Image (cartoon, rainbow, N blue to C red; front, side):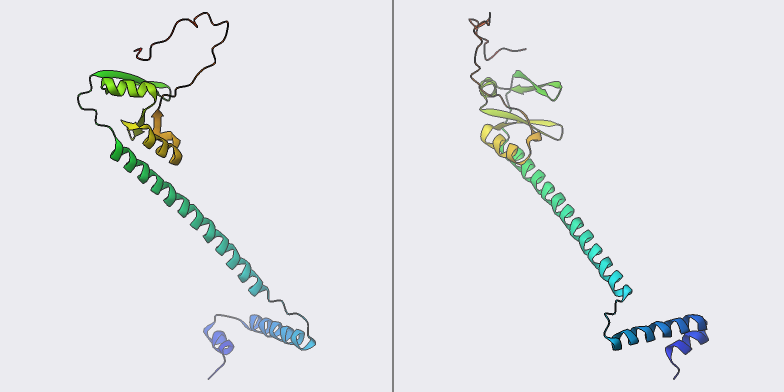
Length: 178
């Protein structure tokens, strides 16, 4: 049986020049081994570099995939919280105006919900294009996960009144409709 080099020559896949060059390279490596020199195989070095680069790339892709899965899981949790704790608005007869970004929106609420909205006891959340009224505790849980879902929640703040405020004696009613 002929050697692999002879078979490749007969098949026309290589030429004599390449065969001789491969033999010289082989002899050079053998000589370096006999002399005790460190033999550096460039192919192995490049293969190791390529392997490390691929490993780093795979790790980066895995981290991105995990981040996407985590974001998707958070969105599912928020959706479940909103749908599971939304307050029923049947019998709502009053308009309640609030701002969603730069737009003023209106939602129909009951008198009790209007009072609770103005006190911050309940909040308004947005899921897709719909608005839901939620208890403040649930709104806080949603806010921990992603703040962008909570559109409106009143906060009762004791504002330090300025001494020179000409309207300090006039109180603004909480149920003021605008």
